[in-house]
Amino acid sequence: MSITLAVVVLAAAVLVGGLSRRYGLPAPLVLVGTGLVVTLVPAVPEVPLEPDLVLFLVLPPLLFSAALSSSYVSLRADLRPILSLSVGLVVVGCVVVGAVLHLLVPGIPLPVAFAFGAIVAPTDAVAATAVGRSLGLPRRTLTILEGESLLNDATALTLYKVAVGVAIGSAASVAQDIGIFVAASVGGVALGLLLGFFMHGVLRRIDDPLLESATALVVPFVAYSLGEELHTSGVLAVVVCGLYVAHRGYRDISFSGRLQLESMWRLIAFVLECLVFLLIGLQFQTTLAEMAEVDVGHAFALCAAMLGTVIVVRIGYVFGWAWLSRLVGRRRSQFDGPRQLTVVSWAGMRGVVSLAAAFGLPQLMADGVRLPYRELVTVLTFFVVIGTLALQGLTLPLLIRRLGLGRSDTAARRRLQAAAVETGVRAGLARLDELVARGEPAAVPDVVARLRGDAESRAATTWEMVDVDAPGLVPAAAYRSLRRDMIAAERDAVRQLRDDGTIDDDMLRDVWRDLDLEEELLSRQ
Image (tube, rainbow, N blue to C red; front, top):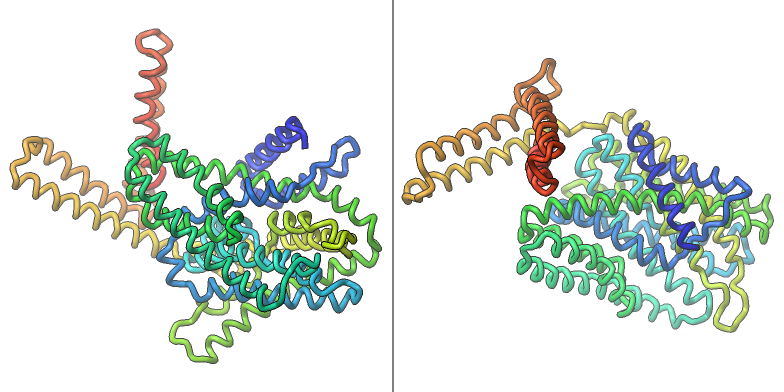
């Protein structure tokens, strides 16, 4: 792909993604649809999907960003259902989907069929959680889906490498393949912990927001590259490192560094998510070329059969695992009832990792013979990805609303957040009392009274927002509305001073930065 074409694709992805965000449309589906339509225009050149580019430049930062925004505490609390989906379901899906394909296409080698099963096993790391978060799914349901998408790529890609090794004739015995799988998983976790510990130590010694952001930006690429070079799971290394930093490292980052890091990763995630979904749609042209090598009518029938198999396997596994868990008498249910089970079983959209793995299949086997049925696997993967994104992606929001799960725990979370803010305020006031009792020179009566009033006002404001859905404008919401208008007037006045030559641009930016931080705080209340 030329540099000019790459820039055009990136700009188009951001434009379409931005318009989707602006008008409240499902960005993944709009981007995929745009890519499909664009490929039908004769003058549009083919945009190849480079597997190494996706797996090295796109996947690590997306996973690291998701890990940073995840909760280690929540993931640990729901580790059983997360592991059952990210490991158990991936293995079962790989075997069942591969076996069904082998039955429908008897000539396809079993290792190639299992490679296809591994390719379509992992769910997309963005699509389901983005929908769930926008509709206000219960926190536990989101945690399970996030945890699954963080870990299932590692399981699927490791199985994929083993299956491809067997298919091309470069693998060893089955026992050695299982040993490779276990070693890669354990090694990836160990490497992620080591890099997380190292990054934590570096962040503790840096007090420069720019260096903190630069360090955090480099880490996912280092983790993935080292993992692959050491023949462990680079994906697991990235995820574990991100979770470690989120749990232990953020407290050692300066406040300005945390603000900058959050903004940086939100921007990176948005751009990369837009890019990968557009690239999925743009692969239609390549897929059509691959279809020239297979029986089209037979391929469409197989596509429908494999799409149905992928969906049914997930539904059957989720409900079957829940039934089995109750059967063995676990005290705590792994899922919160049939409504949550239904959402989790239907949130199985596939994404760019599956496509990258399919397009990355070797052309030749170890003896130089062409890998059989490679084109068929590519076509099937493309239609499974598009089919799950369209069918499940379009209906998942409706399903969540029909089940009454959207915004179901918003009020409870607001109350919990208000209680947390009040706990922090009380701790701050206790510290203020200690400083006053100790005779701190800065603790003059006027300053102390102002600090105490501001602290108690923050706690009261947070509790007022618990009832924000009640009729009428609560005081906290009224304060935010009025203060925003005041900030806009202050910005205009300071800009006028700059235009008149009274102050320069550096001073303008300094004043505006303080106003921006205050408005950011207002937007989070």
